Image (tube, rainbow, N blue to C red):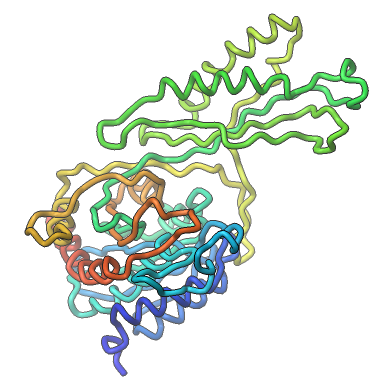
Length: 411
């Protein structure tokens, strides 16, 4: 059986079911990575391997034209309580015209489609097709940052991200920064609060400052306004009979491509410190001096054993809607109603690895995949099979169109 005989939407769907049945939290993608490499080898890829972080890379050789990279990601978010799902999150159930389960549309369904489409385009694509499925996308994009590093990384001419767009062409998104406000006090026994400085007292002025900051966020004509909201409060020590001396307020900040670490932390401090100063004046104590503003970091450990301390920061990006690759992609995909018009061009609401490929590395990047964003990270995650079948067919036109447009830009 030739690779072309093994490639079809139905085969991709069966592959997607297999992928859903393999849980793959960040740092735990090893079994999934091995399954994806095995599929690439079965499909006749010219090369297929995992890099030192465990991201999967496969290549289907084409003509001498530009190289396009198709990319989904291997990791997923937690499924939560299985009892809260209509269908079990790791069974890959097909019912009522949908593929159900964690990863159905974010992102194992599109990953399966991209993987099979590349094989289907053998001898039809004007250039090489790289299929790169990185690790750790859900926690800041370590895998893609590493895959496209300037020293020895992949350098495609264009990238198509397989995050769900419901058939539209996505051209960017806000980034995401996880920011921490750390307040220091003095621990003490809960039976003698006068001997301590309770850092919980600092939480109301901190949150007041965050609300002020949220009310004056910048906006982009295409991406919309940035947003910031407190999403966590943690205290140490954790014993409930001890007054804590350290409280961390965590913020989820959806940022614009122009934002930098320095600008974000400066704006945060400017918003919060007046509230802390007023609190200090009222209390007659020097408490605000013990407050620190920083980007959250995490020691991330790849399934291969590599470790690195990473900032939790996913960059944003925005392509010009009139860029030749964008317009070529929109024409190739077309409107889903078949009226002959181009596909709708819009941004995503969530962050993707396109922030690394385009926002940081400068590689033209678009997004296309079936699936509704509203089901991402929920216990209703599902992939419409009619839409997915349509999307599979459109990918066969999209990839050569993007390569042709990239060649015109390169020439």
